[in-house]
Amino acid sequence: MPSKVKPRLSRGVLDMKFMQRTKKKVEKEADDEQSRALYSNEINEKMINSSSNFIVESSYSICEGLIDGRLSFRGMNPEIELLMEQELAEKRAHSKPEQPKEVSDKDMAKAYYANKAPTVTNSMAKKFSSKKNFKRKQHGDDQARSPGYHPKTKQQFKKPREDDD
Amino acid sequence: MSSSGTIVMPGERISAIEEVAKSKRVILGPGLRRLDDTVVASKAGPLRHKEPNTFWVDNYQRRYVPARGDLVLGIVKAKAGDQYRVDIGSADLASISYLSFEAATKKNRPDLNPGDLIYARVLVASADVEPELVCVNSNGKRGKLGQLADGFFFKCSLNLGRVLLRENCPALAALTRRLPYEIAVGVNGRIWLKAHSLRETIALTNAILALEQAGYAEIDKVCDNLEDFLQA
Amino acid sequence: MNLPEKMDVPKDQLRQMNCEFNPLSRCDGSVMYTQGATVVIAAVLGPIEVKTQNLSIDGSYLECNYRPKAGLPQVKERIREATIRDVLELALLAEAHPHAKMSVQVQELEDRGSIDACAVNSACLAMLIGGLPLKFSFAAVHCIINDQGDYVLDPDQSETFHQRASFTFAFDSVDGDLLLVQTKGSFKIAQFNDIECLCRAASAQIFQFYRSQIAKYHGRSEAIAEKVKEQPEAMEA
Image (cartoon, each protein chain N blue to C red):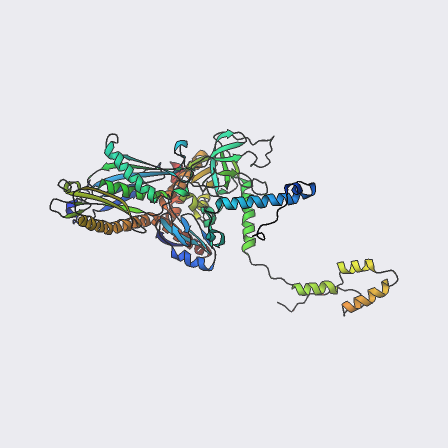
């Protein structure tokens, strides 16, 4: 029996300044317990444990997917018509399938790094490299990272591939 | 929009929905209620189904029962403290705080008086408390909501209101082929209409109310007859 | 009025039923219901605002009024009113609209027998068309034992002058439970059981009538739904 009883902090301790947060927590726990006790005879196991597949929606407009009822036609109220157009455009954008990409993400990344874009890792690494080994490091690292890199060759614009129609 | 269209009566168990519910979540609309694991109708009418998982019972109810998210037309009845009391056709008057309008502050109140018409969204709708409206969206912008000035106001059945607001409903588009106009249709069976002249307004009103009797099949005919209404 | 007389109808059949929905414009749902030559109009309002004295937080308050053909309601009408109210209360899903009132008005237009059953049935139809939430629909059937000891289902007034006993039963549509039993006169318990069975069988016919009438009334909207389905295809074409 004694093992079941939870140790409780005394009031004197809880009233101390640094115990305020614990005090709040203890109070909330007591409150919860009280409310549980209050409704315990009304709430049964089933209500707590049942997972339902039903969602109740009492609005016809949501169920039927009705449109907004504020409409204007042929310039009666330009403000409303603008909103209607925006909505229509939004809907079109949603319903249209995503445009196929001309360049795949992989190719893009490859091209990006091949063109030696400044990356965060590079610029951060630069910060930590000392002046003494600055030049050596730049050469060695970059050559190791991108095999096609030649510091002597000038960067040129790469034509996109044309064979994928 | 698809319709199974079978007529259900109150108390009828709908096992078709229970079957669907075994595999996925199901949205039960108005006229359906859940009793433990069974689904039972509480209203009489055709059972409707919208893909993927929404079911409801259609009916010719004339009394509006507020539901969260509905767009309604309301008439301001009174100012009460920091709220307006608005008649939206439901059992209780709805309330709207004067801060629920665009750019309203404690100093700068919206200028609304009893008798004014507003187009608003139902924010709180519960059987136990009175409904609450708002005239702004979540960004604090008024969008299409707010006061409706001038124009003409009339009532129709809830069903007609819903018919007009269905996607690809040809009625409103057909009417505008003849006349430019501006309209606000509330799902609480109230319509506000504004056209260039009184005569046009009356013609449009008559055309819309004729739909109540006619149904979709005759919509084109009603629109053709619009000129007759104009001459009358 | 050329309403069919009971004389044409066999003794074990209901008289012809007919109804017209929403003949009244100002209420939330109304019906004119005829059974043989008996005619009633029922109207419902609801959910509407309720007086504080009748307000209940558990469910809606149900109000029922019965008006005779002429004059003010007397004791007889009050009893009928209470009967209808009792049946409606059992069927109404009151917890759906707390803080509200449901009001049912029944106006007698012509009483040519079975007025109790007609009033209950018309109230049910009015509730159905008014879209009030119900646990089940219900149907009432009237039956008498005439002076020859025969059972006459749904009698015309002319057949009731020499009746030995009269019965009105109401049944619910889901479990077929008895909602209302009214008896008058002398009879044996075996006769009571017989007549209950007879009425129960007849109630199925009334439920079928309800369903077909609701279907007929929604026929128009059915056409609308069809049209909506066709519409997108028409646009593509």
